Length: 460
Image (cartoon, rainbow, N blue to C red; front, top):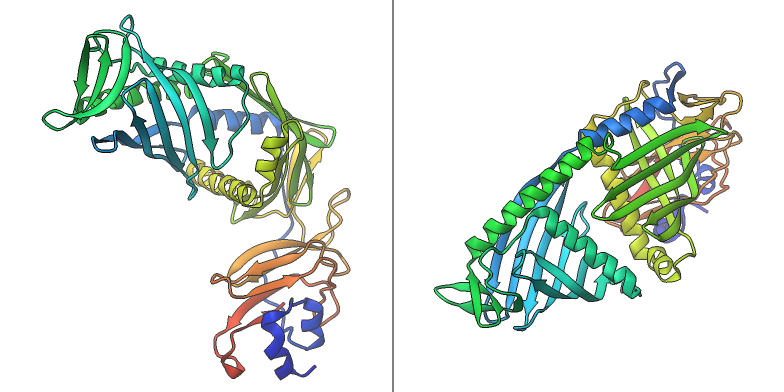
């Protein structure tokens, strides 16, 4: 195949390194500064102590106080607010309450964070008794979250309602001027749009300033209590976190109790192979509901700054409906992307750094977690593969390669505009001009190719 013919077909075929080698396109290997082997070890006590310190020092701040709008025509109240924690801002967007003059309220909105905005909706029945002036949810139905409509038992729905009510009670939200038990809600015009709360024989009307003032005080009180929970909850036994190392694994377990609900992560046994971490069937519990969770992630380090990229996450068969939702291609990709963005924010916000400049191997050695860099042969007991450092279309990522140059995972990277994709299938043999395994790979677009075609130029 001559070069011109290859140029005309390259955009529509999968580009393999073997083909590129046969065409003589591989250029001189990229220059790489090789440093002496580095190694560091961490004990379970050190890891656990750091995690607890970071939780205790975390603060949640109200970055956007509740903003309220009322619409008489559509009988709606809309609330917007935002909080920030560990470099991540979570926005409550267009939380809409739709009224029909009774105690039944339609609720919808979206939670925006990490470039994701899942929507939710439900119907709720609201009650507010004159005895304590606290609005509460007495019933919930038709729950939908990000397109997922779970089949929930009456007891589970009751638990959700009770948790919401405990949060409202904790926030201190009250309607002091209510003169009787709540019988209906509507939006009326009375010197401007107002929210009217009715009881037998009377009503109270709240303007936007009244509502915002109450919500702002409630949000501030709730966040103060949340921050107190984080900072003192470990000592008070409200939350716990433990790390242990041994038998070739790192075990992470955590528990948090609050608002009459207990959440636990148990038996999260993390194993390492090279720079890949994996856990299988970790147990996630929310009260009596339990499901298993499994996942894999790639861990790396550049200039002392670590990073972690989730590659897969799945749940067990305990709740088939939930599993099918998590396994959905779009949902799963969004979940993985969200977790990765969250990790980036947490690492940046905590100034997390490693003791060594870079590493490409992680392993459990006795009762320590060892990280190290090794360019050629891994230490005894280390992983049986090496690292191919790739920069494709400006995207930098490492891939696994064997000592004989065999790619151990499919490489697939698309250009920023999505027009071009380079795919190197698993088990492709990748050697440099001297017949040794490839250590570095670069791909860029030729902006001035023959016949005015953009095409990748690879070097390694």
